[in-house]
Length: 363
Image (cartoon, rainbow, N blue to C red):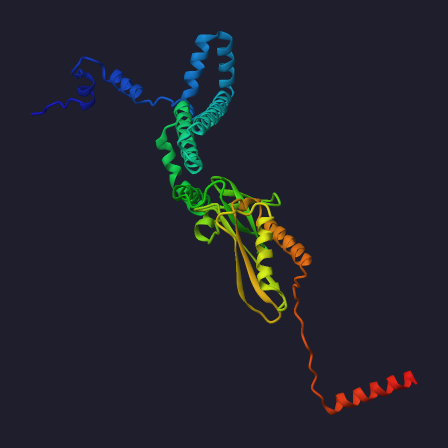
């Protein structure tokens, strides 16, 4: 018995789909759904779009100008940056800088009116408030621009390396300045000894303590900028750390034939007749010893204004001592040396020859 075979293709073609739709139509629909849409460029600054929409609502002319500036843009990958975005960034930066400057100026004026704070506490409060103000202004600028802070995490590693290598000294000086103000070892108005590159030491007064360095003005109006870190690691002579009273020493030598009691009285008289020397603590004249060619005295006195100069007050006292010694015939000796020559045959012949020449000339 022979059975007729039905073509598979005909059977498939004639069988309807479960939902009654044609197979061809279903395949076309699936193809259309699988087609991906084109990705539009993303704005580089999300806040600029909101600002542009707000300007359009306020004024059509300004809105059209903003749209024109936004149309001038460049696209880098999926990022779109327009001229309007650049202007918005510049405007926000200028705004936050102006706001930070005004806030810093207002805080300094407010702190200067606080009478309970001394100079050191006032400077420290100003520095801390300035840091906090600029940190808040920075966060405000980031918020106005709509920048996601998580995006800055990419640069945190590079920023940390920059601080570790390039900005290490800067941050070290900043921390050192804050520590100096906290322990009050160095404060504005103090008088310290300053050495230049040649090693010459001079006395200067601290004018201010900055973020990086302190400003010291010497008597010749030379302003030295000393890094804060140097004051932390090096030895510093602070003439007015605990008290502004400074003792000055003036050594004086007189000849052995002088009346020592008279010398002592004249030294006290010179102190009394010189300005800037304090009456209390009382000056003191000490006999230090008997030198090779002089009797050595040392005059010790106190001043309260070392910023006015120490060398000049010592010069004034020496000038007055010289005048008083001249009036009372007190001799200030100078070193004298006796030369003894031992005799020998050559020197004797030389002396004889010189003597003969002298006789011939006199004859």
